[in-house]
Length: 512
Image 1 (cartoon, rainbow, N blue to C red):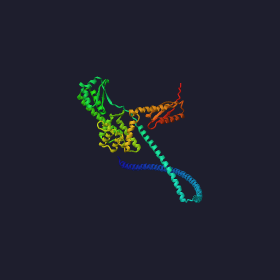
Image 2: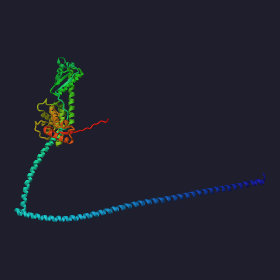
Image 3: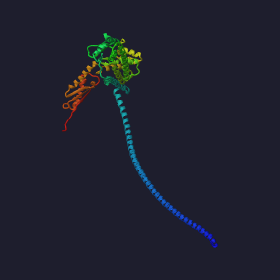
Image 4: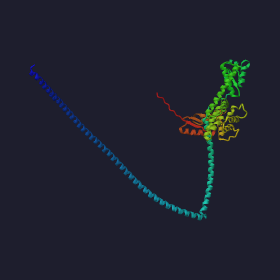
């Protein structure tokens, strides 16, 4: 290469380098200018957006201010109206108060005038009284003190006579009320106790599967029947009664033991003296358990806890004893309930009365073993086993062998009588009870217009159905009154009898 060219090459390269540097700087400047222009535009947009947002916020603030102002003005207007309304009410009340005050002032002036008039009248009356007293003293030649004494003496005499008459009237009314009250209490207690009568069992009948069993019960040469009678103390009657054996004894407990034992022997089929002894022993235990259970149930039912076990056991023995068809254990429970009711009505000791009613026939459980009346035997047994003296007195006095000296003893007597004499309790009174019901229906049937009548509620109510064509509503009322009056005049009955007259008219047609 020529020397001139070699010299130019670096120069050209230097020029190109300088041009490249200046070109790059110019290009960079252009880029920066463009970036600056873009930033200015972005800033302008942000400023514009901010100004626009500021205007919107100012607008919203103005609107909110306008809304709050209008709301405040509305509330102020409402308060102003309320204040005006209250002012009107206050003005109205003030006017009313003024009127009332004026009216009170008028009444006060009127009362003041009346008081002055009364004072004048009182003064005039005092003067007149003084004049009248002077005239009376002048006419009667008596001083005021003497006239007062004469007058008081006459008044005292009249008042004493009137008081004596009043006292006699009150005593008569009290006696009548007491009698009526006693009848009401007794009838209420009787009406609240209404159990069915239980038939008396003097013998027990044991059914047999066949008549062949009779021979097995008798045994060879009668050894089986003799063993049974010897162990139980009952009479075993084997007669022509088909498929049955009769057991008879005065002791109901022994009769029950024999019945249970014989029933077990018949069921088992093996009947011989040794087996009879086993079965009688088992029957004795079963009956003892049944007696104890019956006594405990009676104590719970009567509401009389805390009795000695021997007392409970003796009480359970009454389960197998009857008097005129009435079971003695049920009679004792019923007497306890009635005695409690009467004691509550009369304000007596209900606990003592219930215990006396439950235990009053306790002696009947052992009267075959001990000499004496059952009342005294029962009282002695009760004392021996820790029963209180008040209850023991109720027991010994319930047949008045001992004079009753407490209210509870008298209540026990009454409860015993009510339980034994109420309609249907015993066989003797049952016939009289049926006669009374028939007589009650006969009285009602004797009136004109009666179609049917029924005595219900153990004779405490009679319902009468009349013929509607013969008896109108007014006549039905009159008929009820006439029948009740006729019953009062002709019949004797405890408590009261409700007479109900029913007049029923039915209209029946058929849609075809």
